[in-house]
Amino acid sequence: MSLLVVGSVAYDAIETPFGKTDKIVGGAATYISYAASYFVDDIRLVAVVGDDFDFEVVKDLESRGVRTSGLQVKQGEKSFFWSGRYHNNMNSRDTLITELNVLGSFDPIIPDAYQDTDYVMLGNLQPLVQQQVLNRLNKRPKLVALDTMNFWISSVPEQLKATLAMIDVLMINDEEARQLSGDYSLVKAAKTIQAMGPKYLVIKKGEHGALLFHGENMFFAPALPLAQVFDPTGAGDTFAGGFMGYLAKTNDLSFENMKRAIVYGSAMASYCVERFGTERLTQLDEGVIENRIAAFKSLMHVAL
Amino acid sequence: MSLLVVGSVAYDAIETPFGKTDKIVGGAATYISYAASYFVDDIRLVAVVGDDFDFEVVKDLESRGVRTSGLQVKQGEKSFFWSGRYHNNMNSRDTLITELNVLGSFDPIIPDAYQDTDYVMLGNLQPLVQQQVLNRLNKRPKLVALDTMNFWISSVPEQLKATLAMIDVLMINDEEARQLSGDYSLVKAAKTIQAMGPKYLVIKKGEHGALLFHGENMFFAPALPLAQVFDPTGAGDTFAGGFMGYLAKTNDLSFENMKRAIVYGSAMASYCVERFGTERLTQLDEGVIENRIAAFKSLMHVAL
Image (cartoon, helix red, strand yellow):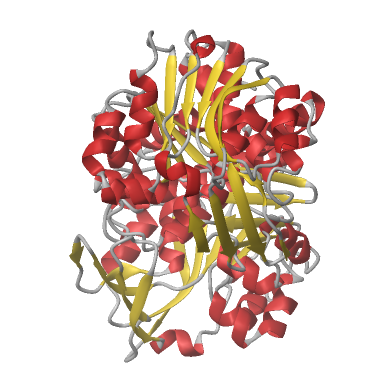
C-alpha cells in the first residue's frame, strides 16, 4: 500500500552528553520516511524546505522509494531549523533555537499523483495545516494517523480538536495525553481522547515503552533497554514511521496486527537512538530489523 | 515450599490526593506476607513490634498461614512509624515522620522451627541485620531475595555490598539501581550489580513496570495501567511478596518461571494500590488474582 507522509524536513543541531553536531538533516517527515521505507516502496512526501537544503538527502530518500514531487523548495528562503541540548539523563532537553523559516507559511500542496493514497501519516505541524491535507484529499484514506505536541494543545485547542475529529490514530506522549484530556490516569485519558474522534490512541512513553488503546482493548510494548542511548532526537517520529510503514505493508487493521505494528515502531526507534540524527536509520536492512524484533520477543514473551 | 519473611511490621499514616489515614498497619514484612499468603501456606515471619501494635492483625496473618513465633513484641516500646504525603502525580512523596522505635535495635532472632526454610525474602532493613539473618540459618536456603533502599546505598555501601554477595535476587527500583552501580543505563547497571553477587536482578519502575535480569537474559513486565491509583504505599513490597510467593509455590527457578513470578508480583501490586494500605490485599482470592493475570496476558501478548 502507499503511504503519504506530511511533516517537517529540516535542519537540527543537537548536543547530547556524548557530543555535538553541526546542522544535520532532521525533521519529522524525514525520520518517518526513512523508517517507513524499510516496509513500503511507495512513500509520498509532502513538505517544504529552503534552497539551503542538502539535496543529496532528497536523492537518498528517492532511492529508497520516497516520491518527492510534493516537496516544495522555496528559493531564497531557509529550511526550518531546531537546536536543542539533552540533559544527562536523556529524558529531558532544552530547546536552544527554533527558526520556523519556510515552515511558517507552509501550504501543503498535494500532487495529483498522490491522490489515491491509502495510509496517511501527519507529522507534528500546525493543526489547521494537518486538517488542510485531509480536506485536499479527494477520497478518505484507509487510515489517517496524526502526531501533535504540547504547544498546539495549549495554544490552539479548538483547532486541534476539529482536526482530531477527522483522524483514526492519534500518537502523542504521556504528558501530552494528560494535557489534552485533563486526566492524569492514562486509562481515563484514553477514553476521553477516543471520544474526541480517534478510534486508536498510541501513547508514547519514551524509554518506558508505548501503549495502544482501541475501545476496551489495551496493549503495551516496552522500549528495548539499551546499553547506550546516544541521541533520542527523532525517536518518536521513527516509531510512527515504523508503525505506519508496517501497517501499510501488511494492510491489516486488526487489533492483533496493530499490536505488531507497535513493536515494529519500537524496534525502529531503538535503532534510531543509537547514533546522531538519521545516521543509524540509513544503515538498516530487513535482517537487522528482524534481529531486533527477536530481541523484543525475548524481552516480552511469557507463557501465562 | 516455606517462605521466611524478614522486615518491618509497622504503623503508617498516609496522605494522598484522595484522602488521609490515621495510623494504619503497614511495614514491608506485612505487605510481603499478605501478598505471599495467596500462594503459600507456610510463611514464617521475623519482625519486631512494640506493645502498641494491633494484635488483631497478627491473628489475621496467622489465619492466612503466617507463622508468627518470630514476631518479637517489645513491652513498653513503640512500633516503627512512618508518615508520608504523596504528590498529585503519585510518583513522588515527602516523608513527614520516621520514628524507628523498636526497629532501631532489631535483633532478628530465628526460631528453631524456622530453620529449614527454602525461600527467604529480606525486606528493606539495615544491611547488617539482613546479613545476620542469613548467618543464623543453619542451611543455605534455595533462594534468597533482598530489597534495600537509597539510604543504605549511600550511607553504608560496604555493608550493603557484603550482604549482596550472599544473596540470589536483588529487588530495587531504577534510581537505586543507578545509584548502586554508578551506571545510568539499566542494562549496564544490571551487569555491574550482578557482578556484586546477585545472579538475578529485579528493577522495579513503579507505574512503568519491572525488569528481570539474569546473565544475558532480560524480561520486562508492564504495570497494569489503572483508572485510579489510590495509594502506592507498599506496592513494591507487595510485588516482592507475590514474586516470592509464586516461586515458593511453584518451586521452579527456571527463567521462564521467574518471568511468570514477575507478572504475579505485578498483579498483586496492581491490587495493592487500589485502596489505602493493606486493605485491598486482605480481600483477594485465587479467582480474583487469575482475573488480573488474564488482564496482564491481554496487555502483554502479541504474536511476533
